[in-house]
Image (cartoon, rainbow, N blue to C red; front, side, top):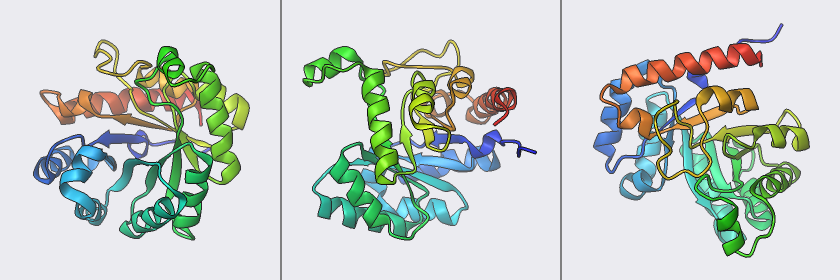
Length: 239
């Protein structure tokens, strides 16, 4: 019998705030509702490794979204430092050399590596400006195949792509989807946006949600509503 997915294990709340104090306050306010949090460039720039260790010590799982892309030695050594902090997920741009270096750098740790396929604020026109003639979906699936080939655990992709990724790569690659917005909440600066229900139905495993929670009048109430929608969608999907 298949174990029921608990939505609280699959919601990643983005702590996109400008200080450690604000991150602490948001985490404290949401309490046990939120088990998994994202630390991105803004918070890491001001609070550094200490915020990651503090969150881990509080029993939170941490998705460190730093999108590494550099020469192999730098990526390898930096990934080893992230593994030592106790983070659960780390993002690396889907470049073969960078991904392979990150796989080496994490060693035998439990750190899961996620390849960034195509940023959720990009569309086909953005790719053409970069000299890439493929469609967004073709590029995402090609990079997901690369991630699986070199030993990454998963990918970051918009809610429009999980179905295509599953068709190409199979069921075992973890798919983490940012740019998720409850219906009626707008798109902010994401070009490819889906609701929690759509994203989970398409095959995503984890949803990253920031502004709809952070900017809500009542973040715990907003989180409860999102978790209820997610739970219903996971129960319908049955995996």
